[in-house]
Length: 571
Ligand SMILES: Nc1ncnc2c1ncn2[C@@H]1O[C@H](COP(=O)(O)OP(=O)(O)OP(=O)(O)O)[C@@H](O)[C@H]1O
Ligand SMILES: [Mg+2]
Image (tube, rainbow, N blue to C red; front, side, top):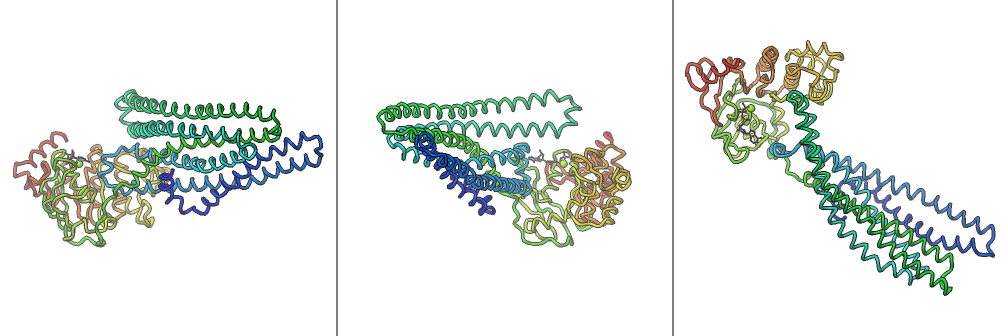
């Protein structure tokens, strides 16, 4: 409970006034409830008293309605206020998580399961919020219970002692079942996250799933995740559903004893009917907060498990942004200096050096796995280098302020990323550009023709990940986006390799056009696309084995020649 409050506090703080006001309403609410229980005595004694007057009956009725009216605003402010605070705090938590996603390192994502991260953001926050709401019951209900017990005590303290004897049993039940629930809830919530992951896979991979008839296979994977979930859920459900009737059974024993004892006391004349009914009423009402407390206790245990995952994620280390130098202009050169790098144990880049001058167009070629994409990732500062350094204009890229640094680079890669939004939004991505600039970018990337043919032109929605466009069309849009950003350095990672020959030609034309007057590093599988580059670097196992112009390299009869022959056969 304290941990939960401590975790939640920073998110509640902006709404502290509302939260305090709502919480303070607990006191009048509990007091009114206790008074109602106490008041039963007056009602019963008043009605059954032979000397009672009509006026007195109306007075009693009036007081009852008055109490309800008095409760109304307190109840409203308490519940509505709490909900408002919790909903807002939940949105803030989600925002913090979303923001976290944008700032975690590439390394974090290569080890994390996407669906699980989604589940933390969507379902864990939901569980956490609703449980937090219930956790307030843990304050409100004991207070109400204590006041009701006070009423019972006032009427007949000896009888009330019987109830006090069972209180430790209640505490025992809550502690034992709470532990069990927590254990299994934590597991079933983890299973739920896993299920979300499988669901996401099943949606994202739709094309391939259909093409390879993987429907049954995917369903089996999903189902086995569900079975794990069911098993753990069954155990936590069972612990939860045992705890409520256990509480009631213990309570009913106490209640039964009270009734028998009350009978004898009433016989000896020590208790009036009104007192007895009011006493029993207070006890019956006392069970209600106990029940609610029991439920809130379960909810709190769920919140602990969800909160653990949420706050662990929020505490993850973010991408390091060590540099302070603002990147304003690219002047001279990009230099890889004795760079070595590994994702895990094995070095995938080994003592690699390369200097690229401003305006130069350099191609990286080599067999699959030779480290080409890794070099691009390192230049983008997606990963930090262990040995050696990358310098731009003589300054280590670590020393540049990350945001301005990345603004100098535009990446067009094989993974085409488009939002489910309009062509316009995809191109500008929130930036301010004139219509003329957008038009020009579309033209340069050979995209204006097909965009103009779309039903609403640049305002057409292009569907999830650009599904309503062809591969070549999507790629031309990403090229237009890169062009619009007007970065001095362009990085192409197999920008055309997912395309067929026809689209490849037009995308290649677009790439060549946006490249003029820029510095380009291009990774190419089809060597025909980079033949006229200023320099070609042949990579093998994390290092450079040859470099030169196309004709020079062919004449060498070495690795490049081999690669060239290989692609000639494929092409
Ligand atoms: N995120 C990653 N985590 C761990 N290892 C990785 C990761 N990305 C790449 N690797 C490994 O690093 C090596 C170099 O990969 P890289 O993607 O740079 O090759 P590449 O030359 O671009 O290959 P391709 O032509 O197939 O795209 C490979 O052995 C690969 O298995
Ligand atoms: Mg690659």
